[in-house]
Image 1 (cartoon, rainbow, N blue to C red):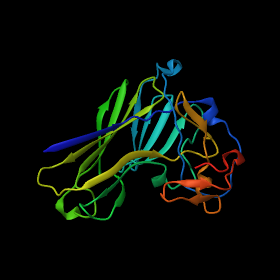
Image 2 (cartoon, one colour):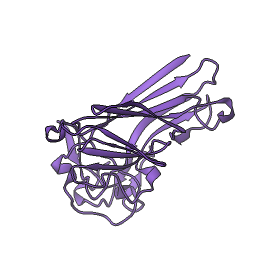
Image 3 (cartoon, rainbow, N blue to C red):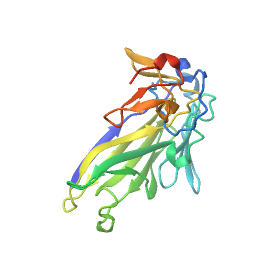
Image 4 (cartoon, helix red, strand yellow):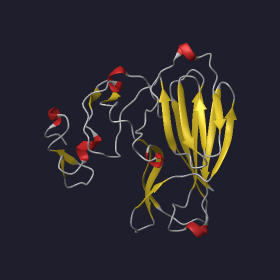
Length: 243
């Protein structure tokens, strides 16, 4: 048995610059991203972590941050933080706000994009100090060619007094299962474009962020690599000519 674990840490904060509202383009889109940081909020540290399990949703709440996930899929449908009811883009479908995904292929085959949705939900830890929940998708030979041959366990953790939600994944490949090529796996958040205009990756890597609308037809020119675009008519004129 072979086990592959890929741990990703994602945190949220009330960075004033990131949350300032500003100009806004009217063209609809479902893309967005931003760099966010994390800190302890001692004002609410006395509030324990609570888990609310409903028929179709699960809610983790520590008094600072509230995260709602679909059940049993484990898709993040909503985040509330510090008086902001909706951190994620509410104009997107619930399945297109916060999710784990991967891009894979059979050896020599065509690439397949897959948003990872769990089929089994369970509680790993539930105390006032910590809640950890699991969303598991298992693989069997009947799924060959449709899903990557891995058991995938998505985990989400919330701690008392923390303004962040933690997430990691356990990827398990059994000995007799077919081979594959995994190009990328990630967790993605589609943030509200009317709130998030600034990104901070590190102390020396922070700047105004282009709008997701800037990738729409008529605002950019796709370059040789599909992921790269030249901004020809961005919402913010200061970004004209950037890639």
